[in-house]
Amino acid sequence: MTAFWVIAGLMVLAGLVMVLPPLLWRSARQETTPEAANVAIYRERLAELEADLEEGSLDRAQYEEARRELEQGVLQDAGEARAGIAGSAARPSWAMSAVVAVALPVAAVALYLHLGAGERPEAAHRAADGGPSAEAMVRRLEARLQADPENSEGWRMLGRSYLALERFPEAVQALARARALAGDDAELLSQQAQALAMTRNGDLTGEPQRLLGRALELQPRHPEALWLAGYAAYQGGEHRKAIGYWETLLSQYSGGGDGEGAQLVRRHIEMAREQLAAQQAR
Image 1 (cartoon, rainbow, N blue to C red):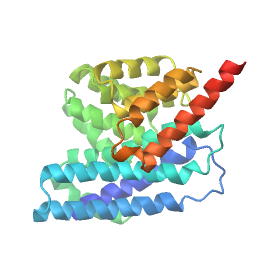
Image 2 (image 1 turned 30 degrees about the vertical axis):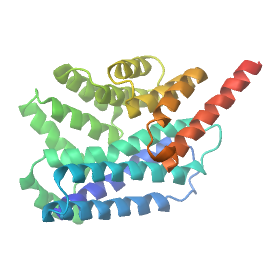
Image 3 (image 1 turned 120 degrees about the horizontal axis):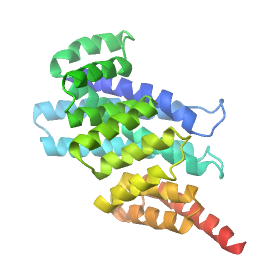
């Protein structure tokens, strides 16, 4: 089972290399070493959690909670590494890369689990040899969905995987299919909004914003929907709305909101306040 987490970590690393650079406004000379180090730590910690689960040191609920915290930590660390790089005018566009970074470990783990236990040893050997990556696994999932087209969870996983691989139009279609089969939920709507925005150079206004509004109707405190809705409002010049979304998101951080993730949200709130003040001064 440890091999599974190694493969998942490799998929995350490959996805970060493919997805983050085009979304982040940075020069070609800027280092990515912190990101690679974070992914390596992520991979090692996942293996430890899996071992603890097998040994009985953790029950399933504890394991799932620890895994979610670990994934959130990857996002927060990546955000802090990039925060000092992005210029003041470019910072809001970082939001899209943050959400994509969150999706990567989720997509890797979900896709690999969905392919079945019998395929894991073979896949482990191939990946260790530099063989087929996430693309090969996506093709296998595509084939499975051809045989079982009513599998809503499969379409959801496929949409996430397309998103991680920058196959944004296909992600939109797969997530729409999942919605048609399973009905609307905040997570699906947020992911579809993100995918649709990425087909439009990161523009979340218009239809993506409508999808996010629907997500927040269903789940008013959904973190991803709040983050993206704030960014959509910011893009549209609705800075007061952006502040409201991000303040609602900030209120959900535990421990007084002193962590790196909370600080990142605060910085976006401050940017929106600065833009609002400038808007009102005209």
